[in-house]
Image (cartoon, rainbow, N blue to C red; front, side, top):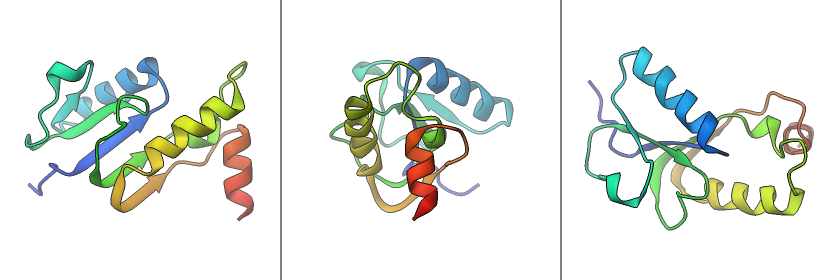
Length: 113
């Protein structure tokens, strides 16, 4: 199996983070679901799954941001969502993969470029 050490999936909130971690685990992929600062091992050979906010200060060669097309969520402040998105997007040091499907403002703007 290829090394999963430098791969992370970042989600906007804890609900979608947990859903993502469960889905990856169902597909028999090793997952490290970061629930808090004490349960993070950067050297583990697992896909790191965490919220965008919790990822601040960390870096990964490969970062996936599924669900960007749904941002900002209904009722969410657009400026705050943009700030959190920026934090998440800048965690990637080599490759950034974004899921742009959805009806959010970010997806619409990014799809136009």
